[in-house]
Image (tube, helix red, strand yellow):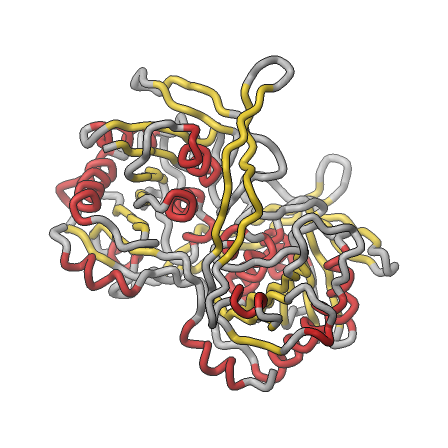
Length: 255
Length: 255
């Protein structure tokens, strides 16, 4: 098995290293990830400029590829031929914060998985740890990496339905305290953004999108409901955004 | 009525100007759009740097705001308070190329509309013209702008279901040759990307994501099916990406 690992925190992020470690126990691993952090960068296809790729050495001594593109660009580069050997599965992460609810359209971690489905029709898994907001560098990614391995094994055994990829969120708990797995639907994030207007040293305004850390509604059956109760959340996602429930009503409007 | 207009091609794009013109026939219009082109830039929330906003004068002599953020940042800035007067509706466009199928997760035009729903719970419409790939500057956006006006009027009358926004695509035809409106589901794009490896003057490689212009499957009932037959396509979209049809199967796996 040939697994492609990427992320949105940058190729040197500790979450990627932990993921690479457990993925290597399952098969051959190639790594291509952004040089820099691309959090909340969305689903990008960089077409207005060319992309650079360089070889870097990870903390474990293995080589990886780093690109100046977005996470989704990294996956596209690999699947379009930069990585010669066919790729069986793409795993993106481990993000140090959860990606739940509406996060999925912003998240570089999740949009990298989207790209695997679109460009390569390859099964893909995004994996995020529900880490504390202002964590130290020593955040332990190994429980989530072990869980990623279990999930990838199941996906290899069973295969994913066409067009479906998995958005996995892991509670921030020691492995033995994680209660199990829940297959969930996408829940609701509650963003608490606010605009922070400041003046630069020359008296001109600039604006931060700031505010409180987002919360979420811990509804039963949802991604956040599962991790709030100590379960791993596995949400199957797809890329048809049609609001089917609205079609009938809109067709009755007098266009 | 107070309408916010944005786009992903940049505040000086002719498609925005045409849209502003017909929106002004319906109510008060505020404009905030990126300084530069953000096509295929995805759903962005810029948090790692502050955003600048400046006043610019459009070709019609009216003022608009231009930001160095993404289209979705522009909408967030406005809804978080940069535009003081409450906004009743966000319209994004007119994009010179169609946004159909999987385009919706990449498209700055569409992700601006997503942001209106998430940040402001405001009805939103993305509007794109199915223009030729290598068009001249003289592309006529007025038919699409007139159609945008008709659609916005309907949305003001009826309201959109909660969480639903509209992705509108207009065929590249004179107004009198457009056959009518179709409420559609998201169809299938066929991307034909390829990797174009080149060497810079110093002999080092760089990579373009290139290839042929994407096509699409003109299936009946879909976005592309409608515009291929000369109809305006109106696709109601929502932000729950859960693959509901896969939940039952995945719940049977031995996790």
